[in-house]
Each structure stands twice: as C-alpha cells, then as structure tokens.
Image (cartoon, rainbow, N blue to C red; front, side, top):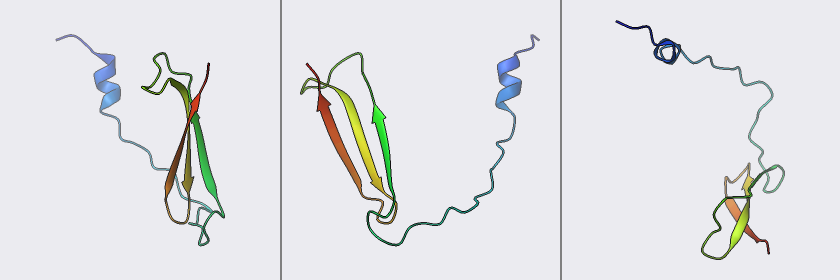
Length: 70
C-alpha cells in the first residue's frame, strides 16, 4: 500500500482558538464587517467584476453592493 501524505494530514484534528475579547455588539452599526471580492474572471449578468459585502455585527443583517467596472 502506498503512503499518501495528504490522507494523513486530512486525519489531523482541528485546533480551536480561544475566543478572547469577542463580544457581539449590542447596537446597530456599532461594528460592521466588510469584505471586498474581485476582480472575477467572468462578469455577472449585469457586467460586474467586484462585490462588496457588509455584515452588521449586532443584527447579522447582510448588505451587498455590486460594483460595475468598464
């Protein structure tokens, strides 16, 4: 039987990191997480190549902005 290194690494247990100082905010828009994604190789149906997401920490509401580039 051959030795497959990736199979051995796949059996490792995931290490959990302690949550320190991470408390969910209580007021809307007190903390907003932002992620920018792009450029994509293929544009969306609207011709967009970039996407920006906003997540409010208190309400977990998600907003998405699609950025069109020419």
